[in-house]
Length: 194
Image (cartoon, rainbow, N blue to C red):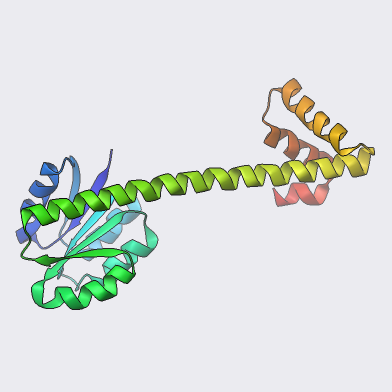
């Protein structure tokens, strides 16, 4: 379930929560200060953060930048018309979308949908990146294990590959675990690094 955090003065919390529920978000967490919001950031995984500037305890600019830099959530800031133009230049470079107040229902809902789509794409790319990094690490470990088998047991590279594959099958473990076992067995320095 997607969590949405709204950070706003008390006056606008109910209206913003209602708009988000109309957008299909059911798990909306509403707080009335940046301090409270920072605590929520530590506790929750968020897909969207909406900051209604200015906040009761600060302007919200530093908080918005911090959210964009430290989370993968989409960040939407609303600002009074006199500040929105100046803020949008600064904040959009950091990845924060800025809407001018007073808000129109349609522009708010459209911005939320766009941020939600963007956040899903970013999350999918992060997941794919993590998978690729894991495969790269697995390949590196397998290469290290094969090198150790070639060096210590005087095997060819193909033979070393078959030894790793066979060990994984016989012990019903992953190739990564088989490679780590070989590294622990034949290289005390390698075992300390993993």
